[in-house]
Image (cartoon, rainbow, N blue to C red; front, side, top):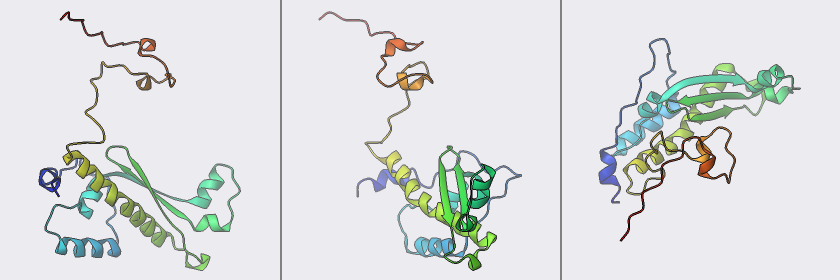
Length: 181
């Protein structure tokens, strides 16, 4: 695959920020660590590691679905109280939601719920981060370079509506001067 050579210059990348000293991020559970160790032992090419993923996490929040429903005035029932949700916010503000729920209420455990929800979120991130790394190395990136800040487009305006013309913006780019041939 021709993309692999340029990919090597993008991996491993350094996260833009490191976790703040007062924030301790949980480490992945045994099942993710076993998967990571096995994958690392069999890989010779660049890859997304579990440590890379965890280094990109900016914030972790957990909630019990039943408690959340009750807080907003809803009528939570028994099954809602055995669902644990993990919300991972990445350094670029992308959010991934992991969830866990035992089949039988007798098996519900807060600590296990948090661990399994966290691992669910991490498993969702793995292919997304691989896509991002491949996209950066691709000659055809999904997103072109960002336009300069002075460029105005209707979607950049908070009150813009679909179908509006650039003339409706406060900062319309100056037209290119015409040249006569």
